Image (cartoon, rainbow, N blue to C red):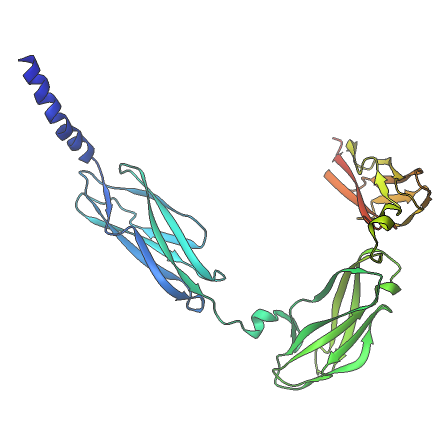
Length: 363
């Protein structure tokens, strides 16, 4: 008798378990993924509405929908969904500046069991054709350029370098460049062509001569040009570059005989100091090479830091120091300042030393 009762209980357990599982709300989507196919960036947002049914026994409440990225926004049924009734979750995808394939998910949080589930959208974004405004967003009167600063990047003192930067005449009239150009001595400017027809592209040709620059490291120069425009005919732009000393190609034997600049410790932390306090440290360095080392220049990242090399010429094996003073006047919190050290070490001609401090205000 006991055996028969046990058998009946075991047979009925799956039924009772299934019955227990069906109690409460249950969310059942008609489909859990949607493929938008090919869409065009120029057409803007696309959306799709996923529909679901509450197949449970009590009201279903969607608490939130979390997209996998900010480019997907959603809407959903906010009121409780009764058993047997339908609801929706809307996925909206913004293709702006997102060319190519995409595959995104939306996580749905509800009072169903399980409390989380995901639905998916995918597709491919065809990029919109680029306009003149896209390619040359900076307006200078009737002219458009990509950037207001012309960046040469890293240059060496080997020889002058010429680069060309595009310029577009966005007006309906011809614009000519005047011969009056204001530049520093190490920069020369030409225009190709000198007169730019309406809605056409030309070029500003800039020649930079780093052999005529007295400072190593980062340099920013102002260039001013004039045009025949009736208004806004004076244009100014920046030419920037980072200058390093040129070293001709060297054999392994020549490099082995070259000078070497080595700092004992390139970073010094002053720790906590009071606002207005000046603190000083010495950065000790050694010529570990086999020929004379010359410290060409030192340049601090800001006026609050002063660097003074005790000696600029060192023989092999000789050591010296660069004295660095940090003035904390007007500063607060964590501070980090750097000093660029330029030398004739061909393997590492530009090195950085750094001072740190935490500036505290009394009271």
